[in-house]
Image (cartoon, rainbow, N blue to C red; front, side):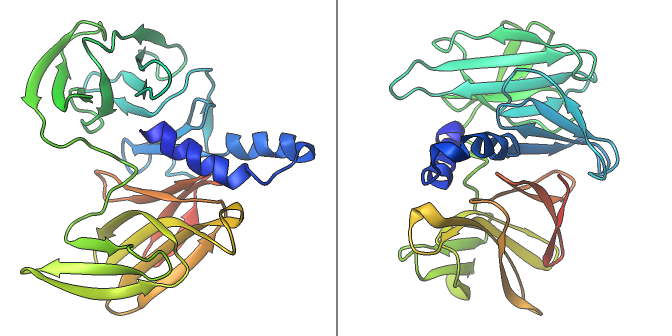
Length: 283
């Protein structure tokens, strides 16, 4: 349901705009980053909302547009050096669909594989870059790609038990108490004991929590007086510095921790990376 969540937040962000701001709204949506993958510490690929991919080979200092009309939820580099992208949708009032894309020339051209969701319905890429491609299907099964026909060349390798949801991750042993959205708490569960680490004063919705070294990071959203006045929220917590909360550009924020232990923040205003208790803009 990644698209639904993203579109809902975008709708909340833009619902108060009038027709004379229509052009600006389109430009804002075009800046939205909805996923990010780092192939190495230098090579980063990000999925733009409805605008294809962007690529950096210098750790985010500069970017190249991989221009295409294709929409990507996720993208990865396979063990044989090919790019594979995924775009899927679990329909509510409209039909399901799932598409896989293959590029042998690093994004210059793409081949599209339209899948029959009644027989094979991948929702997520679960392998890391430079590994054999693994996808997780709607029925929580894991399949491995063993060829270049992304329609048929799949082998079942595992019956999954829990479906990955990259946009709603709370990394253990941390928990969020959001029973009162004006008194959200960051909790730590250890040895069956739950301790309150911090109260999030300016957050009204937590989307993700992840940790690296001595820091815990939180992404989400807040609002001033109503949902029409949303802002993007980021916070860091450590024992030494305590909780630091920030209102950052945009109307919402999601974070992602990658295999290289980088923690990225993505939203409708671009892409950021954490640096201890601060953020650095990458795009």
